[in-house]
Length: 575
Image (cartoon, rainbow, N blue to C red; front, side, top):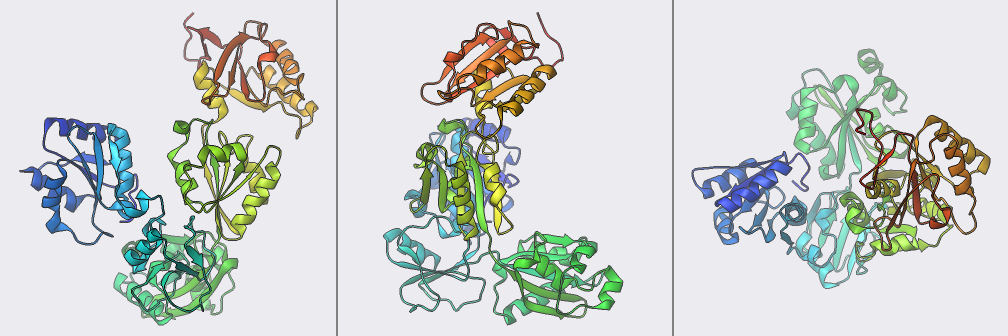
């Protein structure tokens, strides 16, 4: 187990009333956590160790160490263990560290019970990515190479291809594969390599095994054939991204069991999609049986997402009595995370946004937004910052970096898909790039929360900037919103160069709703200088609005209740 998921089984063990109270708080918040009981605390702790993916013990650290020490096996499979003291002052990541999810679990439970997380893993302590935190299997001299990275010793990075790795410190330098093999090395490869005491090997998810089989094929036969062919080709099973087959084999127990044993998904494709793939060894017998002349080779080439253009068949189809296997290598694609940072306050930035910023090797964004997150970035992160008005250039730069095989985070305020960087970037992104969208709290949502509940019913976002949209188009949209009686949210409402558009938009709305319709103006929501101003359509002075503001105009149903804008949902309205 390398990373805890939301479905991980978490066992809670406590000995005292205070400990049980904290454990109940965790169990109430996390449906996947449960209090484990036994004839004794030691018995409960051993049961949790055996049955759960992670353990949170509300006990003394020494007691937990003495009880669990005889049970320790392999850090790659042992449960993560976090110890919380009775007063819930500290949450200590005792076992599991970064690879097993212990550090993240300590952070999460600490936030839940207001305890300070204590993380002693060396790489985490100095803010470097551990080799076993990249989401890929790692083998070989992991401890020695990690120590060298920490100590600042030269470490040669040798990769078979340009995989999107996170930021690495400057002492880890790319090097040609044929360079003199001295010193510490970090290899990124799917090939089997002889081990030594100075080389760690990261296994990228580059291989897809296509599987064909007769009905009722034993799992042992599939597994043995696959392992034999991988070994014969000098390929590591740790680099398998998935097993792939035809749709009619989705319920084939022997194939599914093999995928489960390998810890990879089973992906299936329609026969018509497989039939369209050009393969070296088509079979009319196979076509007659399942509707495609190839299962194993075609499925290996289609891989996870059905794009065979970036795949190379390394192992042509090979058959046993009831199974057929083929293996393809898929070229890496760059990674572009389009990240919404929220309205500005750090505590309104999502954990997923922080994780993507720390996953990136390159961060691209407006200079003022980059300044907000510099403290989050890992050492060695390359930053491409630029000023206002360079949105298209930033989008192109981010896509170009990702197309070169790098892990890139393109950042914007609020939600990156709302008047921000997602749309210009995705206009340029092609199939060479994996795109990850990270939603953020928009300026409208932040403003709405400060104003009360103005967005309780239908509403529309509009930008009043005519830099990219002709005013005639904007005016038609404002008119439609007015006629439809939507709550209106105006972005980019007013600037020194554009000082009349807001007044015109308000006049259009005023022709369709009462003059006492509430209007809210929020400036710098969640940031320094935050200001909330309430008025009506009849009294709002546009002079209080600037480019740092969001203007919210109520519908004909919006009311002021105790100084807050409220738009009823329609269930009932109390006058």
